[in-house]
Amino acid sequence: MKRSILFILIISIISLSAYSQTKENLLAKVAQSVGFLKADLIIGNGVCIAPNMVVCPISTIGKYSYGQVKLQNGKLYKIIGFVFADTDNDFALLKIDYDSAIPMKMATYELKIGQKVFLTSKNENGKLALTEGRLNDLKDFGAVKLIEVTASKQFQTGGLPVIDSLGNMIGISVVPPIVDSSLNFSTPSYLIKKSEGKTDNVKKLENLQPFWENLKRISFASRHKSKAVSEFLDLGVMKLNQKDYKGAIEKFNMAIRISPADADSYAFRGQAKSLLMMYKDALADFNKALELEPDYAEVLDMRGVCKAELGDQKGACEDWKQSYIDGYNPAFKLLEKFCDIDNH
Image (cartoon, rainbow, N blue to C red; front, top):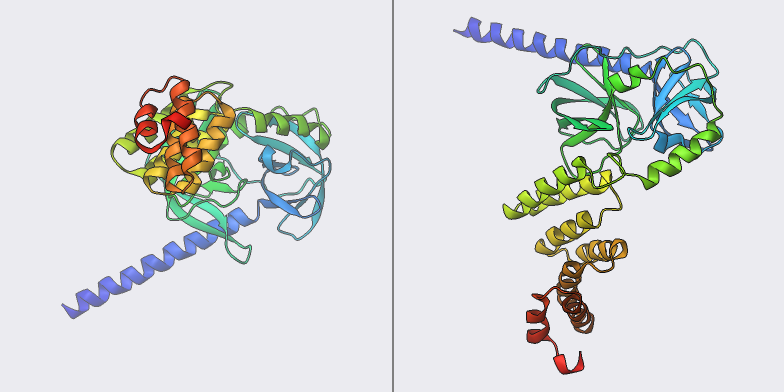
């Protein structure tokens, strides 16, 4: 019996060692292809996908007219310009003044829900690290495609690779839309790979600025309340009905990430925050919703509740009155109960 236990322990140790070694090998493979983008300072990350080509988020590099890439050999190489930009999916292909970079191989097979993947992140010392995760979903929002991964950690920066167990890149990370969550999102590699052939015409880096400005204005999914926004709003409302208010906030965060000018997303998120008694945060969301849609009577009603909870009785009564005037009849009950109607 003792021999059997000893044998099992030895096998376990060997297995763990092999796993650790595999992870180290994967990290080494990732590290040789990751570059750090620099303007005046280090501004973000990118991944070499060809000996003279780096892919990175437009949101990282788009506002700069000059840039460099620091590769793992420690040297800086000038960014000559960009050859392709996809505003919907937020990535650009940059041509660099170097033709011996070590490219990362991109996965060509069909991704499977549940498969093991590894997220690349930076630790406190700025060094690269890998975190194991599972491919949770493949989001298809029309123009926008996203890979959803569940892991114990969350991306803190964009432009870093997500890889499979063989070290093939399946996507690059996007900036996290959800705080304190196990969900991570990345732009799939096959979109990047499809753009590889469009690399003949090199444009000046400063010409990326209109793409960057456009990226700030438009939804990640479409120019209107898209399928993506509707899906996350529906999921958030479902969480609200289940009284999972933190879960609801995560879904509304994602809707805002996709479409930052959608008033409903702020209204619902404010409602979830108010139910968690996060009244100051809720007030900020209601203010934003009303900035986007000034006649949003239901939001005026909810903002009035927040103001009352924060001790601003006068402001609350003004909001309930305006909400009622704008056609939201339930506001009258609060107005009647807590306010001097004759003076309002």
